[in-house]
Image 1 (cartoon, rainbow, N blue to C red):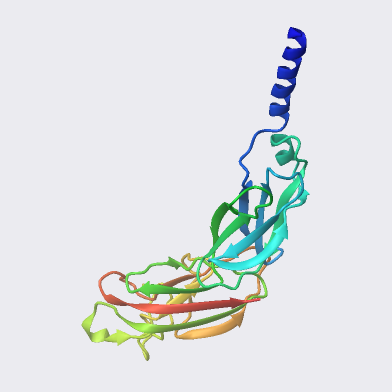
Image 2: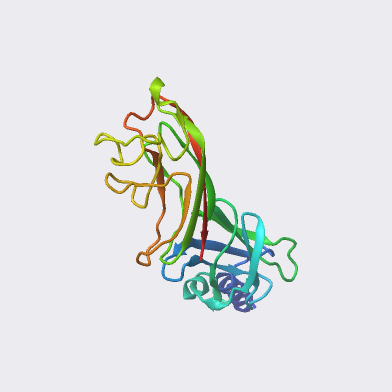
Length: 253
């Protein structure tokens, strides 16, 4: 009898190891939210399990609080299966999304409850660079990273307004087209164009700046990697003036 009782206790202990006791609400994790230059989309990857079932459950994806899509977490994740024996290996999700939202893209993913639980579990949130954004480029700027995600073939539309004063009284206040009728000398970030104008760059390094002015619309021709844009004023002594340019960037596929 004692041996039989010990066997029953051992059996229960082994079962507990093989199938961990979990909360009734879903569990899981958002592993990755990154722009993929080849797919020209945001890759969202992770896993989720509901303890009430060995089957695959649904996950919901939100971007900046706006519902985007529902997918089934049924992709092959042997690492998850090894960590939670008894539930199987098919509890991953791996999707590509092109969210059209304002500002930096905050992705939040939820495991949708089945069975006895009461909550849809937030599996995590991650932020990725924007496709639609407004930035301020002030007189003292020597390079503002707009935090964008740009790909080969994208159409980029930029518009800019506002006024800056360079700090020298005779220059007056200038819009993003700069001090019209004057040409910047060799001491300026971009010689040969109007001083105190709005400049842009894909690298943000000396020699890479080009005149943006009050706006443009163009198609990006590049390789498949992810790009951003930088902005600054064409000011050879940034920081002794005042004012800002307001720059709006909209990117479409």
